[in-house]
Length: 417
Image 1 (cartoon, rainbow, N blue to C red):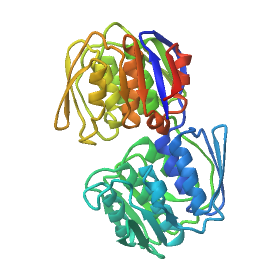
Image 2 (image 1 turned 30 degrees about the horizontal axis):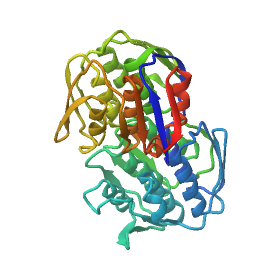
Image 3 (image 1 turned 30 degrees about the vertical axis):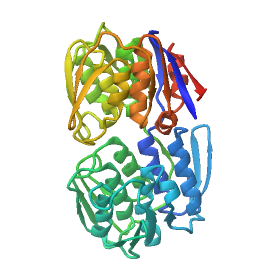
Image 4 (image 1 turned 90 degrees about the vertical axis):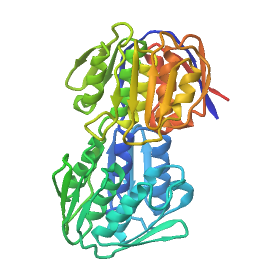
């Protein structure tokens, strides 16, 4: 396995171009199953998760070519409506193929995501949505089996807004005979990107970007090409790096309105921020002020930036609290940040952070994608040497992250464990 070695304390400056959004490209890749034919997807990040979805599409029967940020997918040969456990266990987003397979074949057999219990975890939102749209489902040897050759459409109302379940429901509904209404739908830009792609394919979807979507069934659909939106989570990560270690950092090729909640709080910490048409620049103005934060569904502060914000607050002047209302147990990074000298305690889903003037390098271990990012940010700001092990997590969600930080002046390199 690889590790990242960081010699912290170097000021960061310059411009970094943001890659396409992981959370947008994965459902779009799955959506190519719906209508047989050829698709071109541009601005695709080269990530472990992208490669996993490619392997899954190939198992289903697609032909896939991936080169220089572009995916060419031919779904004409799809003949295996099954997603095996070996792949789904490594990436929960593999579950996105449930709706497209049901839409095209009237049948889908998709493994339960690894570590996911039947019922209490959000996978039941996906299954309930399929049933509301007219499918019959059952749990069989760890697989969700969904059947519905003539989906009737229906009314789906999510108890809790879910990005994954919303995407799956939309992709199933476009293949239904009747109309479907999805209430309390996710409003994240990644869902908007998926709906725009499906609309370009000929689907009739109204309410895009709102919490209520209406999909008219029986539309004639075709293949389409798409440019993936920029990754707002990667952009937020680099902006927070600027607040911790930067002189002046510009994130380029972004949609600034997707970053509004993060930019607003960064301004409250005392940083100078300039927002352009497709870029955001942050100039650090001394030690950041402590600002408490609560995650929320879009357009609120994203849970995928919670760990990075905690790294920033660990160096802030004063105390702050961080509450995660989306994933109540997403705090494995606390112990590792504390190894770097942070002072963080956890009470249920609220982290209390007492800002320290200086972090110190140490050996730490990444536990998930965003936790890995927080450790990189802390390591770049810390005094001395930091080694981060198990960085395969970071490779799932960030494209060439060490190279991008090197371009900004960070002393970070990849090495073998």
